[in-house]
Image (tube, rainbow, N blue to C red; front, side, top):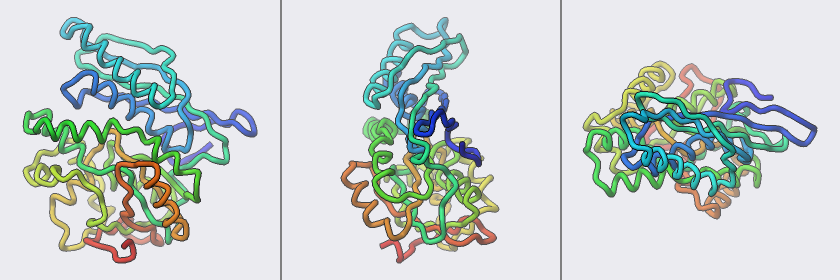
Length: 312
């Protein structure tokens, strides 16, 4: 089931049951091993939520330099992952560990859904409103953490964003009409939006002032504290986006910034947008932002404006 490089593999088992499978693995982006493990797990399960499924079970995947780091570090990583998956209602049923030079951790996650409730990247239609459920800026902030440039408060703020399960946003997906959904991760907001647009054969207009961003990320982006993945994203999207003349360079960085455990990007019919917004508010999402609209397909797949009045 599905197509267009979806977030996870969906396999229909019976008329009323599909299983959804995904796998993800990341290197440390936080100094605390417990927190890293928790974020890695939340990041891994995000694709299940983006497909409109419920996580059921998971397998740990660990690469670890056992000769260089203590077993305590490994234990804390796995404890963080276990606590996050317990919150998600997902059972960690086992896993596999190999020796490596750099720690890496993630999970292979299996979820379930009714086939008719699955959501895909394709399906967005002109007139739809685009919602984003977490703020951007994680890539530049985690780079600052790695370089020792972030305060403890900023690291705490970034952790709280990454640690937040997309379950709260996913619970809203089936309470009103939704045309398409994906999660925002390594390709940045515009990279994942572009995937949705090409799969749906449409374009989009984005309102910069409506995009939620962790405040400290702006100055870090101005200072050039940018991960290599974000630079790659920026180069990739260069010929696919048209930027208003007043868009500053740091905004281009933020909109293409590589995220870890980012929010859901959701395309909702315009007539259902107000109801969907109310549902998201009740769910307690970190952000509930109308960031743009789907428009008929144009030469530039993405148009970035300073503001779109229609979203107010």
